[in-house]
Image (cartoon, rainbow over all chains, first blue to last red; front, side, top):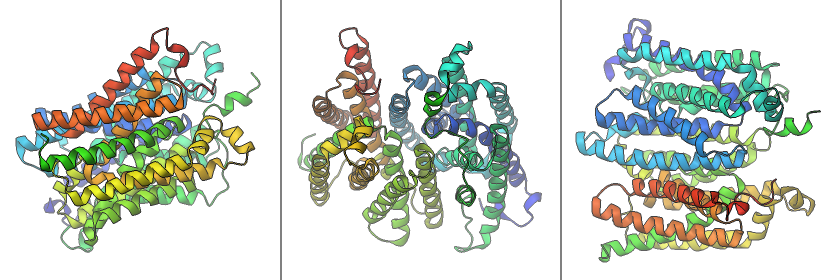
Length: 297
Length: 272
């Protein structure tokens, strides 16, 4: 790993790939995260990332490219959660939890079998925490394409998504298939989360999904602006995180870089805390159904 | 399978199952599933910190678990609960990633803290777990009515002067203490599966709280025993069996709960 941290930031290929992948992940997560926060699905967003880990471990075991494992497991879990899921938030959380529990069990098995096969104990760590500097160049086009698909799907559905989040009843009365919209959105979320799981690790992808979006929703006046602010905040945190991680090679303990994920998380949290300096706007109702109860309809 | 060394495993795992069944019942009832996932998972990062400082892992686990519970409880006043839970979890895991990378000699222990090391539990480890099990059960029993009231009828609880916030904080701290002690034995991810699966299954079958809680404990015990036996036979990780068994029990209960005879009692009886 050490040769990755030589001086000359932009001259190094892994760093350039990291900056590109980081940008794709940050922008996609920022935009999709706004809906995740509005729809109160942070737990689903985090769980899908964890479940994607299982796919990553399974692909590692089967000797396939981990990216496809992440993607397949994420999409399958999204369908399963929506399949058992109840519409009410508590029921949804329980369904999410049960799927997550089962998937983590599978992950334990895959990782165990994986360590038997290769005796590489570091594998579980790589899968969980990821490393943006070891994305293989071959997966880059796939990551960019999947990110674009998730982003465009969400953008195309944005009005319907907002409406069905704020008032499912009004949406239904306007002829929106709320259930179908929910499923499509959750699959888009799964794709996005699998991307960031590959980039900064399954567990920490939650940071890019929730942090910038929660920050943006505190400072922006409209959902559209919130998406823009979230994308920019996420992008700034990711790029700054990569540069800091690169520099940290010269920090103590010497000869050992600090992880990118740590810097990205720290920056995202600083951004969120800074947003408290401003007066909050209640763009989002405190509970997903509060709007429905107050609405004149 | 029942030899001297394994006896400790059976005892410790049974105690853990009872704790998980009881706390999990309330976690599911209160909709704190995300917190039930975040606290043990984040506490695992504390273990990495303790390893870095060279102190007993338990201290790292306890500090991070209780810290996480306090963070979720305190910040939950200002912003939406799920967002705060996610950010607290992410902060702890970010620190964990840093600790692990700085100490750089942790991979094997990481695995056992995430997925558990239930075989080869020593007698010295059984005693604290037993003590903790009693403490957690007592803490839940003491506040049983308050917990039920604030879970089922938060408005009535507020009207009666029972603080929903304080009860939530109390519950989160009990959960944090219960999980931090059990993580070295069953693992952070496993503890979550064991809390949610059986409790969700029990709630899908019956809406009566006492019965559901007893059933939750019973399913958790069966899950753990079955998993230990299977894990012992196959040498596959315990976490696999526990995670899958929890999901299977839930699905079975769901299928049964959907049958016309029982469908009237499914779900929270209060929210309509």
